[in-house]
Length: 164
Image 1 (cartoon, rainbow, N blue to C red):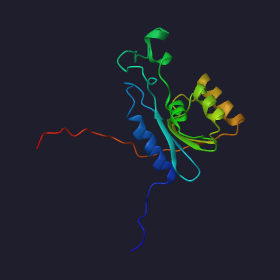
Image 2: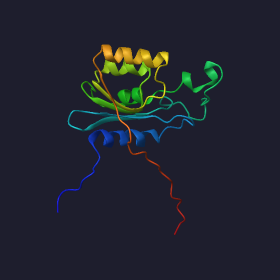
Image 3: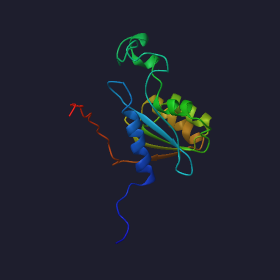
Image 4: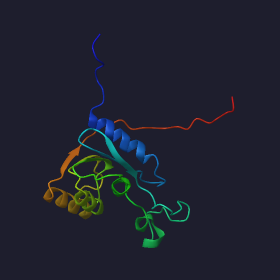
């Protein structure tokens, strides 16, 4: 008997980890996850979009519309930045896997931290000014961009404890 065929590639595997991380997000509209992996295929850090440590998920807005202080945009830390900030070691030379193409602010953090490769899935903001700025900076800095599709999407349902 030979080895099992049709196994996940490394990129598919780590994108799955990014999707799993996204399930931690409390954002009711957009859940984004990120995983940072070194050249030896070892996970360095993970992150998801959410409020900064110490800020209650119930005390800040999650709305997408309204003034700056009535929306999530002034408060939420993106998955990529959370993964970089949560890393116990340098991420220089690593790959970041992210379910949504990084915004221009996250692109700056990715470049400054020394990450050399971005594997992403969705590019739903393609063509917007922020997206164009992000791609301009990443290209100028020599960060490799790899878009993958057809990855496994995780659906988790909680099993209630019936006491049985």
